[in-house]
Image (tube, rainbow, N blue to C red; front, side, top):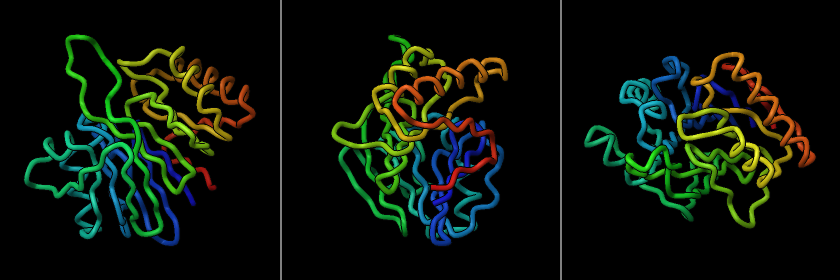
Length: 213
């Protein structure tokens, strides 16, 4: 299975000639290479994780792709898109991809801002992507962790604790367009150290770089 990181929060999984796309939002360049997509997972409704324009581009080339997201995403997308609502504990199969959903809520940004739905997703029991949360699945061994690296709701100490708690065999950074290059260097070093403390390996993926599992 090949995993390609696009900008910010978007991942593209490829396996057996099919693709799965996660969180194609407005901080990611237009997703135009979207053939053979069997599913799109949107972890939550914020625009840096989905836009109508990104969905239209993907569905124009892969009209049979299923969109998965929590109830908040279904409400936000309106009548234009058919979203299969998922919640923590749900499972789904999309082509060669087995999906399991966890969490339920976005991390708190501020007490004045309502907490919205968010689901993390485990792909093929191998790669865990928490969306905008630091939810640690119970009784699940995480082989590869796509961890948030920077966000308005996040501080690096929380990321370190998250990575230590998951103790993945490998990790790579996501949600990093809000960081300068200097900030990325600092945060990535911390994530690398936390991953290595658990015996894992860190991959500092840049946009368009891939990891093969």
